[in-house]
Length: 225
Image (cartoon, rainbow, N blue to C red; front, top):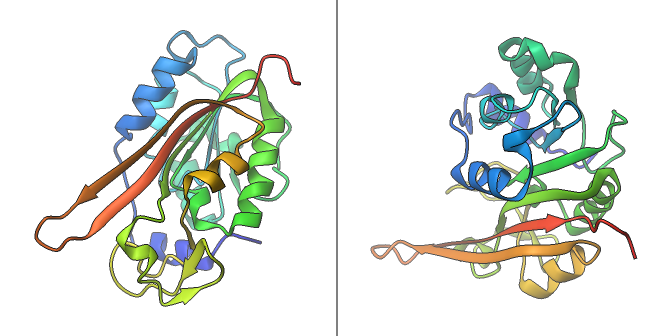
């Protein structure tokens, strides 16, 4: 199982408990899908949903909201907070076969798959492609860039892109962190149409620390080649 126990421990310690929907998720979902005018068959899935920060936003437009996360602790909390979708919230490793059969109009990955090694990300993307409806959108945010300051500061390098062992900073105790460059991204998402691929970098002038990441909006073709 690719899910790292570290995340369950962090949630139990009330860390990484975001409660507000992420603006990039709100903007991209409304602009690039029919969420605003969702019909009875419209379905949203968030992989690595964590504390469910985006769920109130999704539920304001759509009743068919699914979530999967490797932490049983956080999923049980979500089932209590969102009883109307308790039956569509699952504990599991989203890089492995999903425990539900539905296809989706929108799949959201906000900084979730980035905490897996490249081989696991490949499996996850293949499954996401297969489970999107034709024309469906995969929204991925916060895939960390190889220009991120912490890329070269990793205590342990599993391979060129996957680092681990951080004990301080934003990656402390999170386990695996994957970093990406453009060639790797284009290779990984080659089955999709790339609607948008952006690279951003915030630099702290005082420390020189750079937080650099990729965001992308991917679409499954209406007609597969």
